[in-house]
Length: 107
Image 1 (tube, one colour):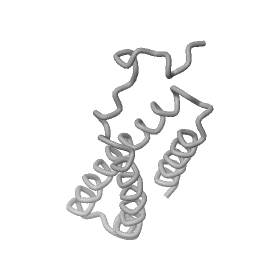
Image 2 (image 1 turned 45 degrees about the vertical axis):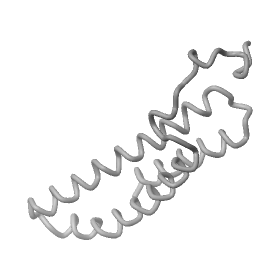
Image 3 (image 1 turned 90 degrees about the horizontal axis):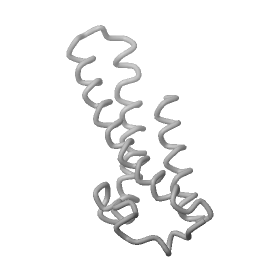
Image 4 (image 1 turned 180 degrees about the vertical axis):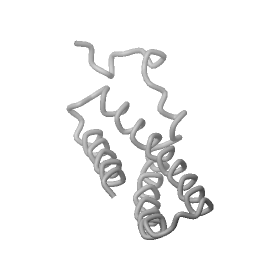
């Protein structure tokens, strides 16, 4: 099997289209965790006790944005990990991303 370092750059993922740097990714990951917790705190009771179309629409829009952000975070983590599954940092990043998405799904 060819090592990642031996693959031509033009034949590799260009993850900069998702996040320009891993620092930007880390910030987005942290923000996603905070936004998910905020979403649950803000809408769990509101939705359960309210049949208002305005509340449902507001929560739906917030959820769509949250899912969009989660897809970006999870995509970068998985694509980066998929090219070298022996790299501990890539593995950590992917596992953290999976945990955030799982928690979001369960809450």
